[in-house]
Amino acid sequence: MTILGTTQAGPHRIRIRQAATGSLIGLALGDALGFPTEFNDVPQILAKCGPWREMRLPRPAYVTDDTQMALAVARALRAAMDRGALDAARFVPPLRAEFVSWYHSPDNNRAPGRTCLDACRRLDDPGLPWQHAGAVDSKGCGANMRVTPVGLAPGLSAEQRAGAAQLQAALTHAHPTALAAADLTAHAVHLLARGAEPLGLVGMLRSYAYENRARYHDRWLGDLWQRADDRTPQAYIARGWDECQEILRRLAGVLPTAAPADDPCLTTGDGWIAEEALATALQCFLLFPDEPLTALRRAACTRGDSDSIAALTGAFAGAHLGAAAWPSAWADHVEHRGDLMTLGALWDG
Image (tube, rainbow, N blue to C red; front, side, top):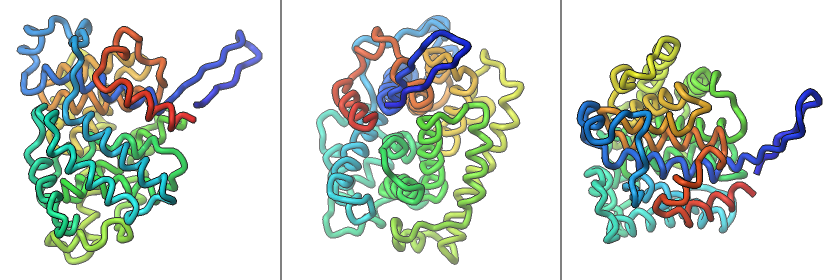
């Protein structure tokens, strides 16, 4: 819980941010708002939902595999950190167990991605090293739609946060761009939760991508890179950072003239792949940094992977504005609210 101080010039005000709670609830709200509009183009969404600025949260507000798997990552993180300092040896067993449990769950019926399903089926084989489960040629957004908890978990070093973000991605999506985009997503959530100003966020992410371009987290990823055709681990991971750097460069060029009425997928992509999901969600958030419901509605009214784009948008907005971003008329009705609130309270302190 972060309490912001007061100024001598203004009235006495204390703002309790509760960034973890805000981010987790925001992720689920965006997921639920975008669930009914996924696979529709904008004219179809407008015909179904009316003007995008007036979109209403469905009742009941069911979530997709985006929130289900984010909760799986959060539970695995909590279990691993309860046993000591977070590292790959502590993180992999509960994470693998959570993913396999999700794979077998009867609630796993919310249009999950084929890559995640296939990888989790392979993870169900206890004799298979986890590095061989993920699809090395897939950079689908399933790798970063669920990584928000890594950016929120308290007490992690930069190396732990990056390593955990990339590892949880690699269990299902082993393409280097999936790893880099997940790392960037967790870093963005972390920066916003710590009070970074949205105006400078894209620049900070571009600097982070540049600084980490040749850094392969071998203590977390092991020999994962050898499944690809790259000559060295540094060459493997650099491919991912280069693709993310390119989409961030495009986003930086788009933002100054972006029109809120235009579908953001037209400029930063439809979000089915990891780097586009990150960039388009960032665009939706940065168009309305202090209007979280408007940002969610813009994200849900897109021609692309609307539930994942809106989920990430909600995670960014909630990390920035805290739990107060979400009116009770929305937050009280989202599926898994109790679990999200419990985790948020634990990490808000």
